[in-house]
Image (cartoon, rainbow, N blue to C red; front, side, top):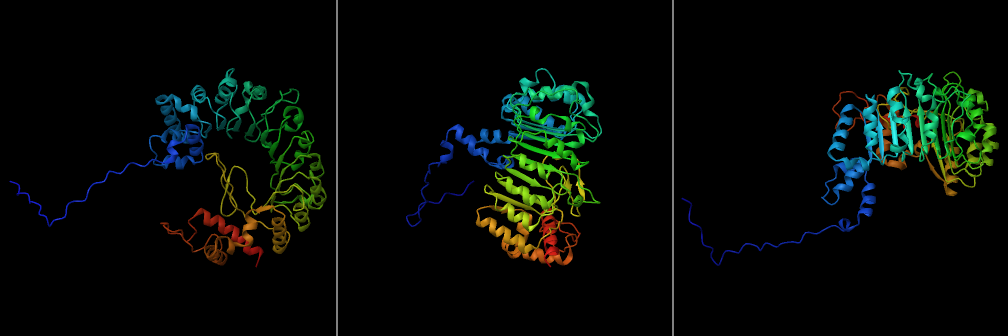
Length: 469
């Protein structure tokens, strides 16, 4: 039996009144769908996944998450296929797709890509010959890839992917795609993607950006670039044999269309700078509309650059790799260019497609991760640091934005304050691979820097300290 209820007396206070508060709504929810799409597009995909969103914003976040998809394994592919079967309309949100594993079954890949009508960027890695041919060379490929603007192809290193006879005419198929603007082609040594010298490719009327690896193109220098790529604005070529092969290619490129040029010669351990031999210096003035230029080792003669650079009056962005022999005279000429807006002094020398380890050796040369960031390698420059400081100061006075790891290493104490000064002191005392600094929360027993960032940054500071005793 429950105890009797106490009767409230007049001396006891009454319970507080419960106030019903109106639910306040965010002004964001009142925006039209078009503006909400733009707002949510500013979120990174991971942030969109982790965000606790209401029912009104959830569809827009889902569209952002699905806009970029990287498939690393069969499990990822199964999950995407399940989502498309459950919600067929989800495929309309996918804009960029990267297949980063050896996908088995050409029909399966074709069926997947056909369900993504809004696809604008496609990355294919380690695909078999039949799968590649089925994806790119089907008669209706121009229909389901009609919106494709960027194609990145990484062929398998252990498969003669491009020996398929159907791929001998790949160029004419790609040239007929109405929206293709960007083409990346990487293949294993010995593979030949371009046709024989006797054949002629159709012009790529819309292609603006071309990134090639010369290991795969034994006949690339015979292509008529001016005719095949009439709208080419951005050219990146990697060479693993002789930098002299760049010259015949540049002679066949339209001098008025090119806006950005990045030539990456192979590194030669025995003679890194090739004795300062000029390779293409005299050809640079041909490209009168060049706006962005990257200066790499073993490709330019410092003495001739002093006379060539003033002729590139439209250069807006210049980047120096400090493996290149950069002198004070070159820097003084560069900062006086009338159109210059940004200047990068790169304190790194990294290889494309591989993570460079702490000791300067490639840690991973596979394409398991499409976003391949280069690591840091200590390098040297051929002029005193005081000259670089003066050059940076003068450039900034002219409104030129100066950046790069070398510029940051000039004044580490003012960049991140006392914390980085402590890191500098510890790493320079013990070396980058034996510093007693530990990352907070690390449970390893080694005395090394546990954080990859600290290790990479330590290499930069260590090299800077060695150059500035």
